[in-house]
Length: 258
Image (cartoon, rainbow, N blue to C red; front, side, top):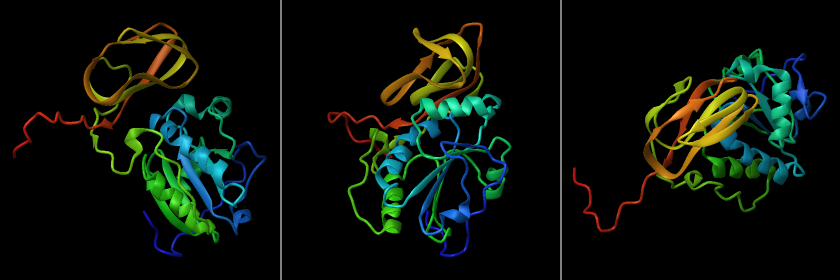
């Protein structure tokens, strides 16, 4: 969503905030270059699904002047631990700067409302556009190119459901704790901490620390039943569902009627 020109300017980062991949950054030192800021959480499946695009934009446009910054604001106690965040940044291959916002200071300065949240600031640190949630990847990349004054092919959709014309079906709502039972989704994940093994419909997943673990994945929106078992030593904080593509209608089927 485009912002009204020259109405919102980027707040400063708290001086005491810890950083990963750089010693520290100041927002006023970014004047003269566009800055893309994304609020994320390594325990949120939606944040993990946007990360490949953030990494690609950093690789593609850093030399042209774009600064990508991740603001890690944990929504769970285990994703507010600084060492766990640093380990996740390394594990996920994130090379751009990440500021740790475990006390929600930056979150409050932005008045942020969810994960992931994407803020694109122009060369004068004025808000150019913002986007909540997944999607709008091609739109964001074209906005980056507009601010940099370049024109290139954009990153193609990394998943079928990321295509601008993809038809998605609403999924089952996330459930706190471990959930077993009927669901509708394109995929099922769980926020887990501890060490041990969990089983989803007979599939074993090794848990070696806090994170969001993929349990089941389907090529399109699927109605199913989840059988989720957790060994001692592992705690499930949330069971998460992601949308899937609408199933293709059988060409031999009659068209739907109102």
